[in-house]
Every structure is written in C-alpha cells, then in structure tokens.
Image (cartoon, rainbow over all chains, first blue to last red; front, side, top):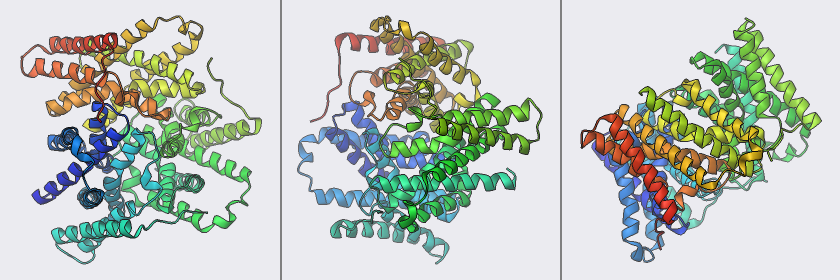
Length: 203
Length: 203
Length: 203
C-alpha cells in the first residue's frame, strides 16, 4: 500500500479505537478490558479480513504500528475522561463515518491486491469496516448492532463497490477511485444518519 | 474435490443458507442482517475448518460460487416469505439433516486432503457441519444450541468417522465411503429426532 | 520447542481443560457441550495465537496430542464427578495460575520463534493464556470475565514480558528466562487473588 493509504488506514483505526474505549467505559469493563475493546474494535475487522484472504501473519500482528495506534486511542480516552461528555455527538458520527470509509476502501484494496475476485473484495471491504464493531458487540455479549439497524454496512459495501468499479470498469487511477469510493461511503452514511434511513425488516 | 462432491457441498450450503435467513427473519434482523446470517450459517463452519487446517485463502473467499449460493438461499427466503409458514417442519428437518451430512463428509475429506490426522479430520468434519450454526447463534447472542441438546454434532462425528474408517480401514472407494458416511450421519440424525434422543447432562 | 516446554504446555492445557469441563457442567451443557468447552477453553487461546502469527495448520489440529490432552481433561471431569465438590478451591486457583503461567510463556516464545516483534509477542503470550477462557465465556453467551475484573491478563502480560526481557535484554539462557517469566506470572496472579487486587474502572 502507498504511504497515503497507510496513513489513512491508521487514522481510521485511531477513530475506531476511541469508540471502542468509550464503549468499554460505558460497559463496566476495567482498564485492561477498555484497552482490549480499543484493540478489538479498531483492528478486529482487518484481522478477520486478513485471516479470510490468507495474509499471514495478519497485519495487526506483523506491523507494530497498528497496535500502537489502537492502544494510543484507548489511552487517550483514559486521559481525556473529564472532557468526553463535552464532545458533540455530531462530531463522533462524522469521525465514525470517516473511519468506516477509510477502512472499507483500504480493506477492499488489500483484498484485490491478494487476488480476490472483485465481488468478494467488496465484501472484504465491508468486513474491514464493520467487523471490529461486531467483535466489540460480541465481547460485550450483545448481537452486533450493524445487523439490526441503520445504513452502515451498506455504506461500506457501496464505498468499496464504487472504488472497485472505478478502478476496474472506468479505468480510473487507483488514488482517484479510492477517493471516490471513500466519499461515496462517507456521504451515504452521513445522509442516512441525517434522514434516519433504515433497511426494511422481513415479515 | 470431484465435481459431484462440490455439487453436494454447494447443496448443503444452500440448505443452511435458507435456515440462517429464517433465523434472521425471526430475530428482528434487517435485510442486511438476514443476508449476513445466511452467509455465516452456511459458510461459517467451512471457514473455521479452512482456517484451522491452513487452507488459504479460505474457500468461501477464493471461490465466488460459495458466497453466490449462500446469498441466493438468503434472497429466496425474502421472495418466498408468504409461503414459508406453509413448509412442513418435517421437510425442514430432513433438509437440515441432509445439509449436515453433506457438510460433515465433505469437511472431513478436505481435512484428509490437507494431511490432517484422521482422528482430527473427524473433528474437522463435525466443525464443518455444526460450526455455521454456532456462529449464527453467537451472532444472535445466545449460547450455541448444539452444545446443549439433541444428537446433532454426534451425528456429524459419526458420519465423518464412518467415511474415514471406510476409506482408511476397509479400503472402500472414496465415493462409496463418502456415501456410507453421509448416510450414517443422515440416518442417525433423523432417528434421533424421531425418537427424541438426547445426550445426558452431567450432574 | 524443547521437550520440557512441550510437556509444560500440555500440562497447562490439561488444567484448562478440566476448568472448561467444570464450567460446562455448571452451565446446562450436555456431554458433547462439556467436551467442546474443554477443547475450547484449553486450546482456544493457542488457536487464536496460531491464526494471528500465521502458524498453519494450527498446532491444535496438526498435533494430535493437544486434542487428546484436552479431551482427557474433559473426560476426567465426567469420571470424577462425585469428587469434584471436594476439591479445595485454593487448589483450583493454584492450578489455574500454573496453567496461565505455562500458556503465557510458551505462547510468547512461539510468537518470537515466528519472528513477531517482541512487544507484540508479549500480547500473543497473553492471548494464549486468556484467549481460551474468553472463547469459553462467549460460548456460554456472557462477556469475557477477564475484561471486567481481577489481575489475570495483566499477570500473563507481566510473565511474558519478564521472559522476553530476560532473553532479549538481559541475555539470560532461554530456559532460565522462561522460568523467571512463568514464576513472575504465577506469583503476581496468586498475590492478586490473595490481596483481592483489582484494576480500576474508568468513570
């Protein structure tokens, strides 16, 4: 991956690590549990993707920067505890959408680089974006929220699909296709929150 | 794997995908969640087996047919919603036993092909058969049913053991050993449902 | 790994298998579920470590001794049911601390042997020690206890760090560094239980 992509990937992980720590703080976890939730929320999606596409050892283990960024995000929540209540929830939603977009696009690109079929690579991008949140929810003993409500995984799928279609069908430069995919995911997610769009349930 | 085995494997996946979608419909999942449950229920066992035996990338990711069959099964449940209530539960039990038999035998064969010890290959067959249901239950935030009641995993173990013993001890042709193993699993499962056999609990 | 290390590793697995079976007995699992909990509790941490560091197939599958020891531990709980109530809880705590120390040190050593960065190898040791208990808790549909209370994972981290620092910084012989690391983990865990030390929670 290029240096820009790595930087963006680490930024997405940082955002998710903060969210994981905040979930742990709310859920009666001790300090170790909070750090584990930071790690699992921010790196869980990429770990699952790496296991599935056959990247070994997984990047979260072979590259020490990933764990460092994850734990830094978690530690920041410790140190900033007094101020967390003052962060506007709108900012959290925007940062989360940014993290989702970065992880979805970076995840799909990595799958392509490992020779995975483009359709499946879209799924791998989505798993990279939402997998960490699923692992976090399961560590908290609840069914993953992403399976029940909100346009969240769909935004990740959309962004990864736009990126791959731009690169493979329209012949865009990789960096431009990635930017378009990220923007598509980010935009759809924010509009969905703003308009409270929901997927239908069956029955 | 031979073409017949692949076809049978895909049939088993199709049956489990329908069951996964029906569980998602019953459990307040949205459309995306239902498709994820189809995927996880039908492919989760094989994914866990592939990770454990070291097949990379896992078949569910490297071969687009698996995901296609899984999502087709899920989508079928969407389209047939109005009729699902009319499917006799006996038919569901028989189809499920068929899916279990197919996955257990195909899973054990794949483990053997990867050089795994025959005893462990029996376990890998059982994991292929019941792993997807465990993943589904955990995504639904409940303890896997297969660990609490019914002769279900035991039927998968029995079928895989018959297949491997037939091939390795009795020198049967692989296709005949597979057939015998599948029949053993299918038969034990159906008799167990009919007679309401249960494993003992401790204490 | 040397023969002594393998023997110690198998001893740790045996202890954890007994604990897993006892948890299953308490939790309304049937006989199969109890054996699965033995397997998952004793081998789950090592399986997760092997998947992350890229050891394939995972040792629990490629080496039949691991599963044998796990199931022997589970079966022992079946046969000794009448006597389980008479085991002093102090003995269980000491044996568990022993299992934790053995798994943490052996796990960190294996990560080093696979070329993982020493800091991450400490984490891999901790995952080897506590991962099985987490998998057990999740199979029982509850949030992993290790994330909420007790000095448990911290003891595993401490032991793995002592072992690696001894080997890499102090230039101790591997066997001596391992012994020091195991003793550090075992000692910290027992003192923490004795003094009822807890990590702070946030907020």
